[in-house]
Length: 301
Image 1 (cartoon, helix red, strand yellow):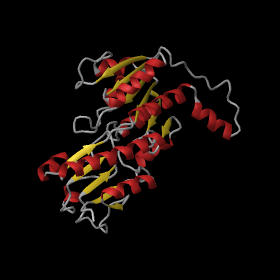
Image 2 (cartoon, rainbow, N blue to C red):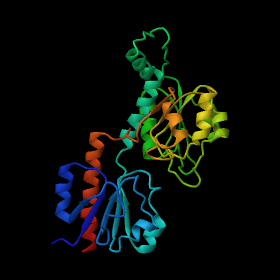
Image 3 (cartoon, rainbow, N blue to C red):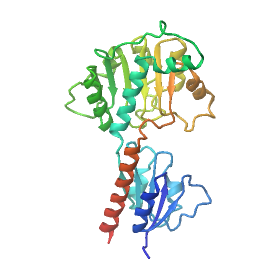
Image 4 (tube, rainbow, N blue to C red):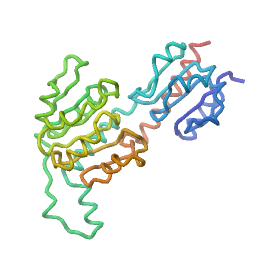
């Protein structure tokens, strides 16, 4: 019998689990609670909702490998994994898919798509009131120029948008500007940075005040990068024309009064951290996880 026990704290198709079973005993636990037996787990597969911290790792005395199929790794205590000698891998496969979602938000806003649909369901014919705008020639500010940021820039350029980028950790950027310049000049702003102590609430009242009046703000990165109270106030004062949110400070967010007010605002498009969840991305994610486990086992022999 294979010595590996693989705990998968995520949702995959049956073919994934059948293939994974070739490399060890597979256990599914979408939510890891105190009732789940963890002592003999050797490989842990997670997504962002599972916090791989000291408390969890201490329940896994035989843990040898952690894999997350995400771009962000703020849910992983890398220092503690290194201290315990546990291998870590991340599989960021959804760059195109998240970028596609960002462009969908932009196009939905510029065409009044959401309000058009809502008004029709209310039997309101708002043909004259719903005037959109061309995205051609509009400036898109991209905060964070990693894999996703680059893909967003490519798609926006194809739509003939002007692209500007702020990322102090990436050199030789074709569209590089300061954060202040990006905030002041962008018609649309999209965020693609990890959540760290440095980026926590990096978009707050001061930053929003510098944005163009009627700018449109998008966050598909991590909740907590935007100060939600400041964001709600900006909507109330009509500083921003709208917001698209795929992530929230607390997830799921429904128990938080402030976040609920944001979600229910008609100028907010809110999605459940799902904008990059395409069929193709999920399949590719599964393939990447299996390959990583196969390579890890081979290297450990």
